Amino acid sequence: MNRLIFLGTGDAMGVPRVYCDCLVCTEARTTGTNVRLRSSVLIKSETEDFMIDCGPDWRRQLELRSLRFIPTILVTHAHFDHIGGLPEWADACRWTGNRGRLYAPQEVIDTILRQFSWLPGNLDLIPVDQGVQLGGWNIRGWRVNHGKNGYAYAYRLEKDGFSWAYCSDSIGLNEAEILPLHNLNLLVLGTSFYHEEAEYATRSVYDMLEAQELVGRLKPGSTVFTHMSHDVDITYNYGLLEGISLAHTGMSLPLE
Ligand SMILES: O=c1ccn([C@@H]2O[C@@H]3COP(=O)(O)O[C@H]3[C@H]2O)c(=O)[nH]1
Image 1: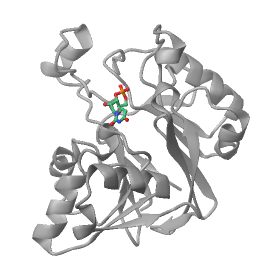
Image 2 (image 1 turned 45 degrees about the vertical axis):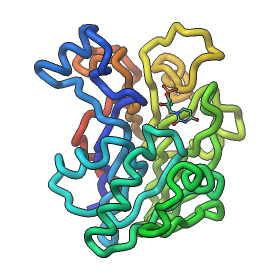
Image 3 (image 1 turned 180 degrees about the vertical axis):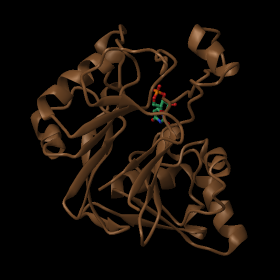
Image 4 (image 1 turned 90 degrees about the vertical axis):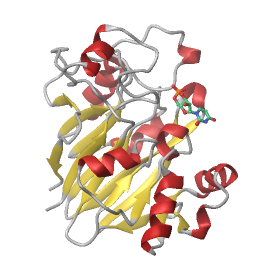
């Protein structure tokens, strides 16, 4: 029953990128295998389902799974591709007479409130700096380097001896930031490109080659790359280390 479902696996612009006619974007517009909504996941458990992140594709993501409501969302950081759906979620709460519960570190809540000051009308915004329990998972977040974009948070979730982490937006993690990623059954890691050639100072997310090095060190039980840009064709065999796979919309993994 404990399952992880990928609702979105794309980077900030999603795939296809609106301005782009590259092969991957063209495939996404035609066959559609590479269509990627902005990154978020649904965690299903016996007691409570919750999402991580609420990007601008939130509404479409719920429609695609025939979900009519989600009461609880944990947020990694206050960038548009991770919070752009919050006003729609709050409106859905208003129309259904529910109060949503948004969990995030206090500094993320502060940034969200500067952008969407009206959310507390329909959402409780609850700090998780001391950790939180959702769906029976003991969850701890920590700040991770997000390169030119500053910082995001990653989350480690533990229940009944199963440990996994969601780290969608990070790059060049230092030893302290890497520490909570040890001894995982599953690592979900953001990798925007296979090999990103842009100057390092302009980058914000691991590429697959760098991420693979990290995975080689950490040796989680398995690894799923997400947050992928139009650089990545998920039908292509990149020859990644055994145990690494690429996420796709609707991918469902057991968390036990
Ligand atoms: O202060 C900021 C900075 C950036 N952003 C968004 O987050 C995205 C992160 O990836 P990107 O760098 O490709 O594009 C960025 C923007 O879309 C934001 O909402 N607030």
